[in-house]
Image 1 (cartoon, helix red, strand yellow):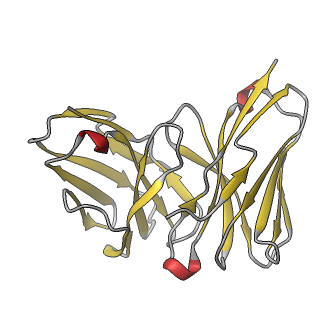
Image 2 (cartoon, each protein chain N blue to C red):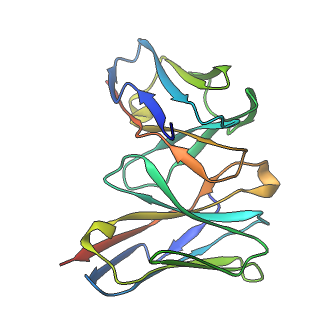
Length: 112
Length: 112
């Protein structure tokens, strides 16, 4: 298995909703990442987990809450989002932080 | 945080021509990577070049790295319509903790 699987592929939520994005990999990778990408812009790093521990938080607002329940799973919990949070959210994993990464196909999030 | 700057921002060529994209970065690195993204979905890892390497080939791809100038180039030879995509360089942002930080990207359009 050489894929990173992200669910859901699309999500529409209101500003008062709570939702979660899920990411799964079975490649034995020990680093997992969340990125946010706006249209026609590069991916922006949000969080990095290394060996299931949060190693980097790029000053992301607390309405985004990451969780790494085990070495294969990565969640991003969303609460009280703003319309400007609408974007493509990408999960990725790599053998170790900073190595070549495998990306999921992303979750297209719309906040109304 | 942004690490790299790609040049040009957009490139339009005919099938069969070569495409060259450049990337400059700011901090010391362990490696530099190139990724391709089609239609705003997941990124695909193309090639990784380590800081002690100067040139690397993979199929129709040739990457160079000049650490003294903090720059890299990606050459795609004999381009095809299927190469139409956005191309991003990414560095492992050594001084910021180990993560992948992406440049602004080059949008390549190959017409038949």
